[in-house]
Image (tube, rainbow over all chains, first blue to last red):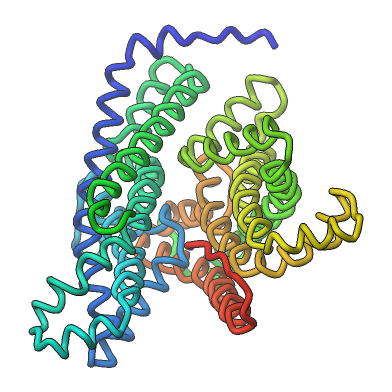
Length: 223
Length: 224
């Protein structure tokens, strides 16, 4: 092999990559928060009294889970303008991520509520708790504890998957790297460093979630 | 000139789905072989081997699939191995599938009750026969539902091969879209085609899992 690796060009612009990493974290966090709202609404819809609503929630969840995220991104960015919804790349990326996350969050939230033993709900009802009190004192903490690990890994999954939105040039880490590659053609060196950055972000968030989980649930019988 | 989206364009997309399926099969076969090695290394008594396998899994699961494809694609051409998108995609997805299947199957091997190992040892079987005749057959049964579930993730993942220039379903969509300029119709069709490929597998995975649960076996789930 007669290729000479040149990581110097990468380190010179390392600040730009760090900024890209920050954009990725920001985009993923925003998508996660909005996606959770969709997930809670979706989970409510799956247990709704109206059959149509239940069916719609099913179609949404199955439709998203059985199609690639990349195609969802392209559908939102290229397809939706045909029906008058014209979005900037970063808006389209966020929308696609929220739609995608919403489906997975629906399943996670549903599993969490189901994880609360029926006996506890009955006990709460027997004590004369209202719906709200039941949620506040009986359901909420065990449900959160049950879904916390799944939510954490879902966040990391979407953070890694978000590198795909670089194809519509939304602003995040991979797109920043692509721009650098277009300028100095050091594709291998740049992507090695960027891969390392993603791995570091993944490990950091795993550690963060483990700490939060311990702090939140420790006095409540351990995580 | 702008082309119409006719039955011919639809047929072009359907035919392009063959490459999606073929790439998935190659990755699954290659990843199956690699995954078995990783899983066995992961439960090995040799600590260094187990740690290497764990590190490999951690790196693949902790980085974006797109970055892995880029590194294989650009790395292979630097090493003058190949600059062909086909080979790079096959290699990249094989590594990806090896790590995920390795981790899934490790879980399945460890889900086999300890007493089975002890019973096999009591029958004076060596380590390899223990694994080959007692543990792996039982682990395979537990592994069936999550493996089917991973197949769905792999099939969806192959859409990323379009970014390094491999012509499969997603790239075919871009080609048809550039000619017809009917993005909603083109990408709507492609969404439908992926769904037709993935949904039966998802249903099968769920069915197998319920069957295993009814049989009273321990189950491992893989989130799709």
